[in-house]
Amino acid sequence: MTSTSFNPIAAQTQVLSTNQPLAMKQGQLFHGTVKQLYPDQMAEIQVGQHKFVAKLEAPLKAGDTHFFQVTGTSPQTELKVVTGPMVQTASSSQQINQLLESMNLPKTPEMQQLLAHFMKAELPISKEQLMQAEMWLKALPEGITKMDALQAIQKMVELKMPMTNEIFQALISGQKTTGMNSVMENFTQVLAKDTSLPESLRQNLMQQVQAIAKPFEVETGGLVLAKSIQLLTSEAASMSEKIQALNILKEAGIVPQQATLQNWSNLNAAKSGQPIPPHQAGQVIQTILTTSPEDKNQLINDLKSWTANQNLLTNEQKQQINQLIDRLNQIPATKQTLEIFAKQMQEQLIKAFAQNASDRLFTQDSNALSVKDHLLSLLKNDATTPLQSEAWMRNLMKSSVESPQSFIQQMVTQADAQVQNSMDNKAMEHALKTVLKNLGISYEAALNNKSADLQVIAHQLKPQLHTLLQDAQITPQLKEAAEMLMARMNGMQLVSGENGHQHQLIMQVPLEFFGRKMDATLQWNGRMKEDGKIDANYARILFYLQMESMKETVIDMQVQNRVVTVTVFNENNDIVPLAEPLKAALKIGLAEKNYQLSGVFIKQFEKAKPEKITAVVEQQEEHNGVDFRV
Picture 1 (cartoon, one colour):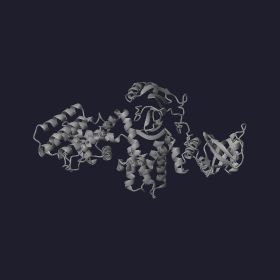
Picture 2 (spheres, rainbow, N blue to C red):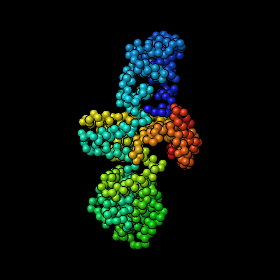
Picture 3 (cartoon, rainbow, N blue to C red):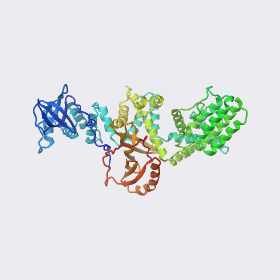
Picture 4 (cartoon, one colour):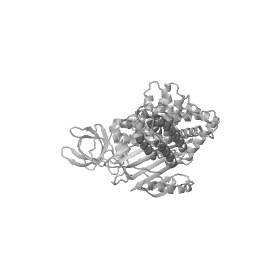
């Protein structure tokens, strides 16, 4: 089975509910039925599930169906009859042909398809919209079916979107489940060859697309950092190994250029006279340095509390740190003893976090800090932001990969292997979050958040694409590649949306794991409760995956009253025995989130294609969200 685009997750919806009047605009055409006649040529007209009263230009017979055109809306709706009545023995094509003649519309197959589609959908559309839509149908891009285009056009009419080519292309792109990786790759290749852009803009874009293409590079860099530190603190490592490790840290800007094997971890003088909140480990050290000897007791309490709550340290390491703190409690507090204690604390924390890097690769503490964040804060004098942390890790990876030293290359290979061996649900969650964050698909909404980090947003790909497309000097090739990528991102937002309490979310994610590329599309449909929160008891989720080994795979997950049923569609029967051992882990993972696994079924596409999704919604008790481990 080849999926050009997915079926809508809910049945085709009308934006106007039956509780709302049907809004008519002058010039619109629609197919309706005369339900009841009133004096003065007034009549009740039914369009789909909607009824309204309008004045007719000519008397008609109740029960007949016609194409109507709106000729006026104020003070009352006035309708012109465009076609004669449709008799039961006649086909709708007769009315369509009448409409084409009376409205002087081109009698092309595309125009006939459009009229038939909107007649069936029972939606009003204007002559201008029909002419524009016909042009699109005549010049569809390769790989786009007319049904894809008709659904996109219908959505534009339903949601009263401007009939622009940009929106049409975005909606077409938003319906696809494949090709995101190829669009990203095409943009990257064109960008790499472009020499007309300012170098700073080109480098920022290249860094961002690389960050998307390598979602685990920062974690691999964290392991290289930890291994380098372990070498520098090891008595067993040779002098040559230590020098190579130190040089790599210098090249990445993590330690000063003047650092030596004897002083690479020496503390710099605190830059602030005020205590720094003890979140990062480096800030803990700075707090010790800026604490007055008279406040020693409070400092000891704060340090013990921070240590107890630090889940990135082992119990044995916490015990060793507490012993060090107890020794401080037993000696008189002076500026000199606090400096000595700070140095000892720094050395112990550096060794502890470096030792734990592999076991806690995708783990964060209560302040959303990772092992590498703490290590960097201990080596850099100031607290590091997540953006700075990522930049240093990527610099470290670049220096390490380009290093001519075989020992450094071996260290990178080992780190890469450790990341591969650590792949689990946390790793996949991390990869998805990393890619989505770096894409910046919904950065416009993030700008409305007063607490948003504008520097982080500015580095995301989508806002940078906006800047690029505003450059009048951009080459046609780069502009086309950027527009294709932008259309993909905008399409996700346009296809996603709400209809009353029903919400639909579409996400296309280009993933690359250790040289293997995969297109992943998530399609979620569920209900938002009155308080604006997701009803976690009921949902329908489709995962469309394009993988190198398993090829096309669709995972259909249904949640009914917190009971989960999973169906996997794939052409390969060999995955059945591979999936069996994973069912137990899935059941346990769902149970941890208070969900019950009903069953996992594996089917081939030709035997049972996934049906169109009709959401099942009921009002249930409040839950804060949905967290699935699949």
